[in-house]
Length: 80
Length: 518
Image (cartoon, chains in turn purple, green):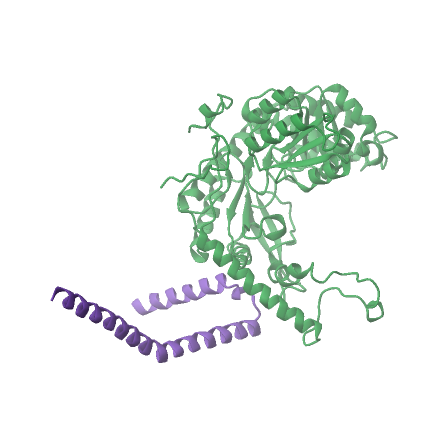
């Protein structure tokens, strides 16, 4: 029951995507071209995110930690 | 609700007009849709040029390619690449009289709308929400049809001559007297074609050295007539009285552009109901301005005659004003009277002048007698002179249908433009794919609608336009509303956020912004 309504909902979402990007009006080979292009772009973006985002996040984290750590040392030295 | 007070008590009834703003997300997504279609349009054109795909639209022969081109390729870009994809929603062949219900031939296309073939089936009893049939006179049986048939056997189909030569029949004189009595003016003249009434008579009334102030959204016939006349044309914002007053003040103060002489005549061109927006002109204010600045008013009541007003006499009757205040009252017989043609009504000197000097009177064939009889019978029916109360009942039925339909659509959450009392109901669609989808889905559910896209409307504001009729019963409207609700949920058309933007009745300056009520 739940799976059927889930599938209907997903189909309805797909119809909305078709209407908004006008692929509802395209001939089948145009749709194939359009979807291939979109899916390729999406996969490339996700792959790049998978490889680069953890490295960038950890570098940024280290940088901020270093900045904050430095500040704490400086304030401590002044107070002394 | 505050409108009446602000306008000095000119309006005897509330004037409720609203044009809800396009939601930002919807506008962005519409542009995205058009962008994708443009890219694919370029791709298809490229393929057609390099013969990878067969070119199915009109091109010149090989021998003529060196000559001046006959077909401008880029101008038809929109036509080839968008219109062709959704062309099956327009020009559908019907096979019965287009009354409240219509029969349609079913057709399919095997090459994506470049050619159509009939399957042979006839789809019966489609609820017709696209015909301009405001009072339901589009019938092929009844008193109008019988009278027209009798006149056809008496007078024949037509005289093939102009009004000034041999084409003037006693039927035409009878019609003109009746039209003058219906409108409440001194005299009237009728022409064979509504478009020609505007485009051929405005040049007879104004010329060089005159000024025409025309509304932004006027019909092509008014624009053509204004351009043909040779007068200077200035455009004011749609139904915006502050803009019109500013233009009038500038015209009186500065006069003609180089010589600073006063203008010979100032003519204001407005329409009664604007058919793409569903808005009604602010006639009391226009008349007040016209009197203050001593200019003339030309009112085109193509859609509002018969459809507005407690006795069906148009927008002048709706506001309760004096018909003698409007200098030239023009209208057509196509919409509410179920016939063809147009008329101009006004003072006797004006109409006598037009009988001699108008191009339509001198060169155009006169109206055909059966058509004239249809107008006479339907007009007498509306005026209740044929002994029945059918006309009055129809006018009231149309007003009830209008209010009910508009209220229900607004409650459902669609964006509806226009005035609450206008029988033309535009429902906003915005996205190009939804134009085609809406037309097709409604036809699947046996309802025929008219969808309108780019050249007739601004590019992102495409809409579906419903024309209500006195022939629609409440059951038909309820069926239609149920289907519209379903299709609205299926296609996600319920954009309204119930934020009505009240019209600008405060002084118009650059710091004015729109109010919203949450």
